Amino acid sequence: MLYLCEGALDVPAILKKWYEDEAKSNYGAYIPFVGTVRSEGGIDGLSFDVYEPILNSWFDAWQEKAKEKGAIIKMAHSKGDVMLHESSYITAVFSPKRRVALEFIDEFVEDFKASAPIWKYDIIDGKRVYALERSTAIKGSGLLS
Image (cartoon, rainbow, N blue to C red):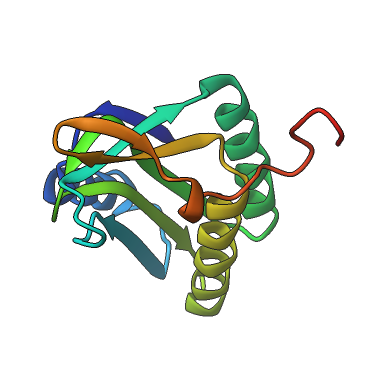
């Protein structure tokens, strides 16, 4: 399940819904990860552009990996502006065993940072400034790849 939202994510509502959706699914572990915009470099917030077709394919591939381990992944991400101390990213792994969920959430979050087609901009004085120094090129992208 992939959920994209304009602006900041409602963390309590999303986590509650996911928990309720899976409460009777017989998973022994529910491991959430919440990413929050932190104050650094004089920013007022972050802004995100998302390329949904590639994001959907990337997420579907991770769902298949999870399925092989008897687990599922849920993810929510913001589009547009998210201000300081608000959440732009939530993911959770549900699995029968805690070790699977703990390992899988780590792998998933790291690959998300490296591979998801989401572009981040700093919001400074009401303007979007591409966050080049904190961005990672997507594998296989670019003219010479």
